[in-house]
Length: 66
Image 1: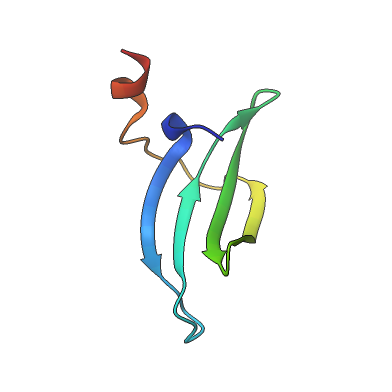
Image 2 (image 1 turned 120 degrees about the horizontal axis):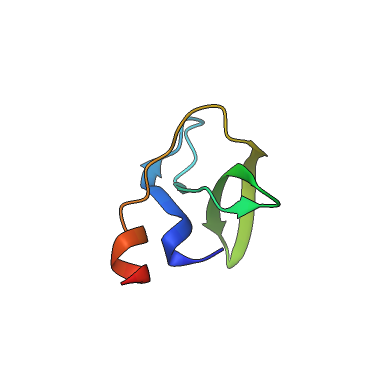
């Protein structure tokens, strides 16, 4: 994943754990993927990994590509 794939975050967790979630949506083989990850004790936790169901926005895409 790249900075330009960033969509949202950090978002508070919904399970009571003190995790901050980050949303990325890279394109792979012409398909936009939805990936929701958090860092916990130096490890990456992936909560969601699937084809994006809705259109996503990329707040840094133009800045990075410029």
